[in-house]
Amino acid sequence: MNVNWITKIPSYIPSAARTHSPIQDYNDYVYFSDNTKGHSGKVVKIKVGLFSRFAALVNPHTCDGQTIIRQLEALRASNCAGPGVHTDTQSAFRYMLKVKNMQVFYAILDGKDKGKKEIFIGDIKADFAAGPNKAGLYALNTVTNKMVPNAAAELDQKIVYLNGQCDNMLDAVEKATTALEIPVADTNLRVFYTPGNIINNLGVWSSTTQSQETKDVITQLRNIINLNNKKRVLWVAEGEGADIFSKALDSVTGSLATYRFRLIDPVTNTPALLQKLQTKEIKPTTSEVAPVQYTGKNRTATLSIEACKQVLIDSMKQLKVTGYTVDVHQEAIASLEASGNTHLGSNARQLQDTAALNKRLIPPSVAQPKHNMAALSFVQALRRV
Amino acid sequence: MKFSNNIVGPEFNRADLVCFDFGNAEISLRLPPQPGSAPSYIAKSDQTDFNDKSGRPWATHPLGFRIKQLIFHSWDYCDETSENTVAKENLMLYLVDIPEDIKPEISPLCKQKFNEWLFYFVRFIAVNGETSLLGSEEEQRGIKAAKLPRSREEIQQYSAGTMEWPIITLGDSDESYADLEPDHFIYIPISSSSFLYIDHTLSIMCSEDSPLRPPKRDIMPLKREILKEILDHIRVTYSSEIEELIAASN
Image (cartoon, rainbow over all chains, first blue to last red):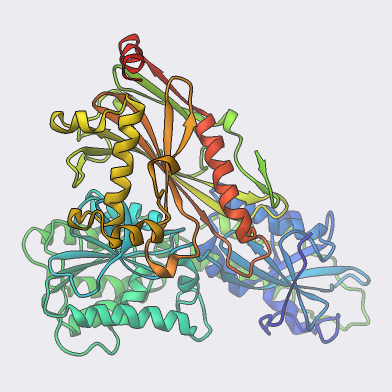
C-alpha cells in the first residue's frame, strides 16, 4: 500500500473544514459513471468544469483511457488508502490518486444520504512523466547512432523539431522522423526536446504560474532562436511544442525573416502564435506540406479547435503561402472548415444542466429526493466526444 | 515476469513473434504488444527484402558499413500494485551490411576478430570518430565518461548456442548524465558480410522523489535482468553453409 503525504491540494475541492458540504458545492458535480451512482459502494462524483481537460487527457476508446476510468470507478470501494493514493497532510479527507499521465484530487465527504460518504473529484492535473532526458537541443551522433546534446549556434539550414508530449527522447525522435518523413540519420535534423514534467507546467495544462524549470527551458529555446537569427532554419512544432515555441518568441526582438515554420496539431493558442510569427516575419514553410496541419491523431489538438475554429480558420487564411505549398494549405483550410463538431461543448453543457438539477429546491426538513439514477454521467458524456 | 521492487513486465511467452529471414540465417524474437500502438517493425511481406522501400532507408556509418533499422519497439514495466509505469523499454534492432573492402577487418563469424574489431569500435566511439585522437588521453577520458569497456576482455558475452553475442555498455559522455546507468548494445553475427545489433535502452520514468522509483543500486541489475529476458527469447538459425564457416573460423 502506498501512502504518501502531500501538503497542498487545490482549494476548490469541497471544503473539508466540515465533512458535510454546503448546498452550493453539489451544483457543480455529476456522477462520474453509471457504476458510481451508489448501487455498489460509495457514490463518486466529479466536478463538471473538469470535462474539457479530462476529455483531452483521457480517450475512453483506448485501452489506457478505459483503465483510467476503471481506476476512478474503483474509488467507490476506496477505503481512503488504496494503491497510488496520496494523502493531504493538512486534511484527513482530501486525497490525490496518481493514474497514467494524470493526478486526480478528491475528497471523501458526507453525501446527500445521511450517514453515507461520497467521493467528490474536484481537480485533475496533467502529470506526464519527466523521463530520463533533460530539455535541450539534440542531434544524432553518427558514430553511436544515438541522440546527444548539440551546440546551439550551428543551425544554418537545419530543421529543428519541437516535440509535444513524449515519453523520452527516443519517442520524440521517432515522432520527428515520422512527421518530417526523413530518416533519423538525416544530418539536418535537430530536436529541441521538452520533457513531460515541463509540458505539465505549460498554460495549456496548468493554470498555476510557470515553474523556474519551465522558465529556464523557454529561455534556453529563446537563446537558440536569437543566436541563429540570421540563419536559415525550419522550425517544426508539434503538439505542446507549439506552446513552448510561442512562449519563447515572446521577448525575441528584431526580424526573423530567414526562419520558416510548420505547425502539426498545435496545442496552444494557435491564432496568437500565427500572429507572433507574422510580426517577427517568420514565414510558412515552402515545402509541399501544409504549414498548419491538424491530422486528427492528437486528441488534445482536435478538441481545442472547437472553441476557436472560425478564428483559427481566419488566421490560417491570412498566411502568406507561396509556391507548391498553396494547394496543400488550401486543402488544410478546407478540411478544417468541413470538419465536424467533436460535441465537446454540447456535452459539457448537458453535464452542466444535469448538475444544476442537483440544486436543492425544498427545505431541509423535508425528506431528500433519492439520487437521480437516470442522470447523464460524466463518462457517458465523455464517450460521445 | 516479476522483478525486484514490485516491478512487473509483459509475459514474453505470449508476446508477438517477429521473424526476419536473411537467406543464410533467420532470427525470431518476441515483442510484447503495446495496446493502441502502431506496428513497430517492417511489414511481414517485407521481412525477407531489406531494400529502401521497406521501413527506414539504409544509412552509411562513418566507418563505411551500412545500417538499416528493422525494429523500434517500446513497452512498459509497471508497479504491480498501482499499475503505474516505472520504466519504459525502447528496443531497436538494426541490420548492418559490411562492404567487401572491410569484411576481413570485421569478420562477424570469427569470434576473436569480431571482438577485436568491436573493441576498435569502442575506441572510435570514445573519440567521437576523431581517429587522430586514438591512443591519446582523450580516448581514455572518453571511455571512462561513456562507461565503455576498457579492454577487449571487458566486453561481455551472451551465450546463444552456435555463437556468442558480444555486449557493450554505452553511457552518455555528457557530464550532466553521469548518474544515468548506461544502455546496452548487443551484436549478433548473421553472415560473413552482415550482423545485427540491438540497442536496448531502459528509461526509468519515475521522478527522483517517487516511491515507485527503484533505488539507484537496483537499476543496473534491473536493466540486465530485462535484457536477459529479451535475449532469452531470441533465436537465430543458421544455414549449414554458415555453420561450416563458423566452425572453420573459430
